[in-house]
Image (cartoon, rainbow, N blue to C red):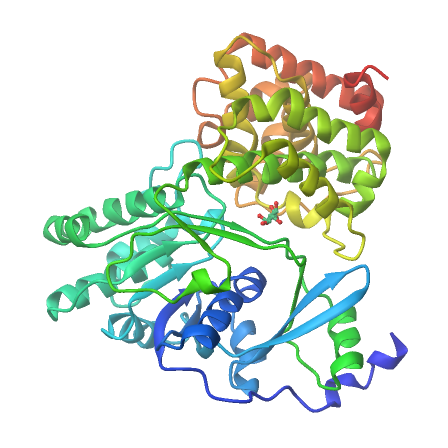
Length: 485
Ligand code: CS2
C-alpha cells in the first residue's frame, strides 16, 4: 500500500448539507448500521423528507465518534463488486454520542419527545440473554450494574428502560424499540429482556411498557465485512478524500419490517424495505439458510485453511456441502415466506458467497458462536430430530464449532477465539481426555444447548462421530466423507 501511506493527509470528507433534525436514536453505530440502517434512512429522507436524522450512540468505544465527528457525521458507504467500488455519501447521522463518557447525555437524547424510534444493532450478546431460551440473564454484570445505577447505565437494556421511565414521568409518549439484530423473533426477544429488567426496577413501569411500547420484529440482510486500512486507502484513491468512517458491503440488501410503530417512521419502504404483518417466516429463512451456512462455512472453512467465505466455496467439496445442507437438512424446516422462492433464494446466496470482491473473513463470522449457534444451527437440528431425522451435516458444523473453540487449528496453531464464553469453552474442552468427553463437556453449556439436545442420544452420537472425523480426517476430509466422496 505504498500509495496509501500519505492518504490520511488527504482532505477529509465533508458533509454537503446538515442532517435533518433527529427522530431516531440508534444504539450500536458499527459497520453494519452504517452499511444498512443509515443508508435506508438516508434514502428515505431524500425521497420523502421528514425529521428522521439519527443520533448514533456507541455503548463502548469512542471510535465511531472519533471517525464521524470531524466529518459532521457524514461517511461513505461503498458497494463492492467484481467491477470495483461504488461510493455513496450518507448524511443521515446528525451526532454521535459515546455512552461511557456521558451516559446522562444519552439518556437526555433518548428522553426527548422528538425521538420516536430507538433502533438497535448491538449484536447477539448485547441482549444479555441466554441464547437457548431468550431469557434475560439477571446475573449478567451489566444488568447488575444497570439495576443499581439507573442514571448511568451501560447496557442497551438499561438505557432503554431508564429513558422510558423518564418519558413516562414527564408524560411523554414512548418511542418504538426496533431491534435489527440477527436473532429469532428479535422484537419479542427485545420486549422480553426489557420487560423483565423493568419489572425488577418497578412493576408499574413494566406494566406501562407492556401497554404502550411497540417492539416490531425485523429481518436484516446485507453482508458487511470489517473495514480494513487497505480498503480505506483504496477508497481515497477513487474519491480523493480520506474517510476513516467508510464501510464496505455487497450490493444486495433486504429489510423486512413488521409494520407496528406508534409514533411514525421514515419512509424506508421508498428505499426498498418491505413492511409486512409478520416477519417470522422471513427471519427463519434468513437465519437458517444464510446465517446457518455462514457459520458452518466459518468453522469448517477456517479449520480447512480458508480465510474468506469466497475461498471456502471456491472449494468444490465445500460448495457441495453447503448445497447439501440447504436441500437435505435446512429447507425441509423452513416455511416459505410470501414472495420468496426458497431454492432460488439459496441459489442467490451461493452467488453472494462466491463474490471474491467481498473478502468476508471466516474468522469474523466465527466470532460469538455461543450466541449464534442456537438460532442458526440448533433450531434446525431440533426440527429435524422432531421428525426422526439426523441432520449429519449440521452436526458436523456444530462439531467444527467444538473443535474451533478448543483453540487450536489443524496445524496446532493457536486460534484467536472471540466469544463471551471463550475462556469457559476452552477450559471445558481442555479438561476433556476423549472425543466423548469433549462433546459431553461442551453440550453441558445449557445457555447454548438447553437441556433437550444433550439428552438426545441420537444427536449426541452423531455429533461425537463428526467430531472424531474432524480429529482424524480434518475438516476437508470429514466433509468429503459426509458427502460420500
Ligand atoms: C454473519 C452475518 O458475521 C456473521 O455472523 O453471518 O453477520 C451476515 O453476514 C449477515 O447477517 C448478512 O446479512
